[in-house]
Length: 252
Image: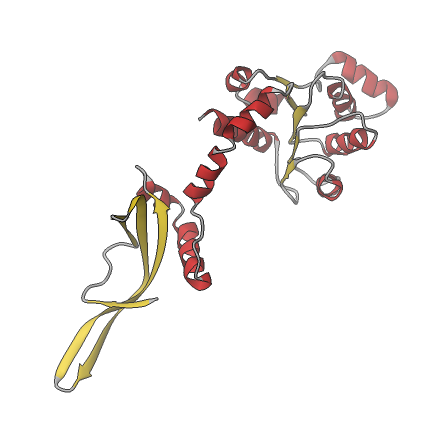
């Protein structure tokens, strides 16, 4: 809404606690401030006019810093709130809602064998201490001599043989694929044959040959829960980062 005031807003936003809503802050966002002057009879009125948007958020230490770090996102929420005339759940509220499912998620993760990667780089980057505290471990069969020998004998990639080895693990796994598109294709073939039931597929291989096609295959068939970075971007570091983000969300 357009607001008039004697002075221009001193900051891009302000916070004020709601006396009738303990633990809730009203955030006022300001933009497009400009001076105005108008005459009424013999009186000259001057001041500032600006757009003001409101958003209610859960109050906590560091809220101001979080808003500064994602100002555009919060401002967009406030504008949408005004446009739709209804309360838009804040990012913090969404996280709070997810916390209610935290126990169930932890139970689910502790029932898994662990995580399978398609590179030693991803394996090295995953926080194995946190994973071990949940009863899991990281597997990567790509460098195993017998995997390389079998792949050569069959004329297939090591990624294919690695996924077949992973299918023999006793419990479901999270598959973090950041390099080999053929690993995703192999996962799809194993699932289609009812030989593999991943708990989650993280599909973020990087490159050009079959990268987009392999990702779209996972999305199109939707045989397991997935996190996929569409397009050609990704990498082992991205796969590991997603794994760690999931682990830290559970353990924080």
